Amino acid sequence: MSTAPTPTTSLEIRRLSYSDLPQVIAVERRAFPTPWSLAMFVLELSKPSGVCLAAVRDGEVAGHLICSRYDTVWHLMNIAVDPRVQRKGIATALLSALIEELDAADGGAPLTLEVRPTNRAAIALYERFGFRSAGTRPRYYQDNGEDALIMWRTRATLNGSLDDVPNVRSGAA
Image 1: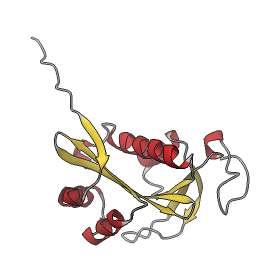
Image 2: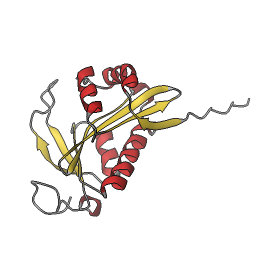
Image 3: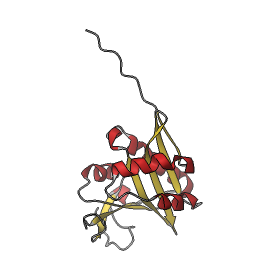
Image 4: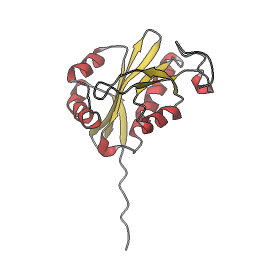
């Protein structure tokens, strides 16, 4: 018995557009217990300094990423992958594209995010990209009151230190 080869699926990372929003909202609703509203996505897409990316797989939006700049710091606001295609490198591709773009444009400006402490897969992904935990935001998540873990990616965190992370005492990450 022979096994037919598995077709390869192409993944394209590109700028998110307003026309993607119906698919983005669908992914968001499948991925999160408290999804962003359409208005939140429209607001972020309207910011000229933001980076909004779509991961397109087989012609469909399979994931998205929203990152905003506040003064000298970038904030990863939202990253989601359709649960039907998770664990296929889509979040890795989105995050890699973001970091490549930020490093090219900003020379390694600090990047921060919040993540649920119970989301071990996301934390492991962020750590692979040099993010380090630097505190918590109490009762951050509205659906269950869970705290958020605050993570940073800076020049220092890439070298195992929190020395250049704002509002954190110096030391090893």
